[in-house]
Image (cartoon, rainbow, N blue to C red; front, side, top):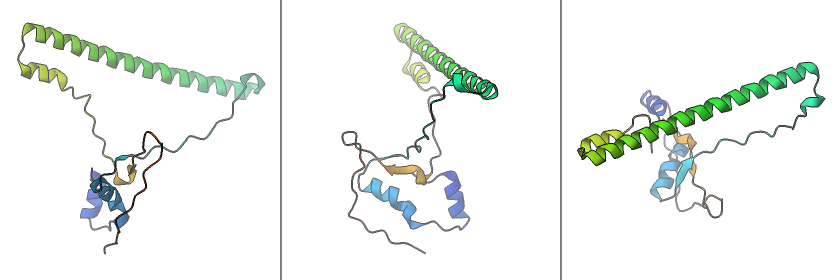
Length: 149
């Protein structure tokens, strides 16, 4: 857990760094679980009956529905290709294990560069983790945060 590259560049350039941004580090030090800030809830859209729309609005609605369906199909195809690639790697791994291949070759199959994705996460995106049982964040206390110049 740390600062993003942009935040580090701002600090190096001499811009002030507010003390409240240290809170995630303090919470982590105190042993609280952190998580990425969830996105805000999407506004509820009214249910549209396409039969009640004017012809122009109906054409626009049909076009939007086709775009949504195409995006969903594209995502499903990508997931299918990804699953096929993983299955192929697993099959190759099993063949190499059966042939008695050295551990270095097996490790090369396990370390797929596409699987490793590291996000440059801003410290503003870190919040207290939510308890799975209660669905609420824990109450925090026991520290005093003072600003710095």
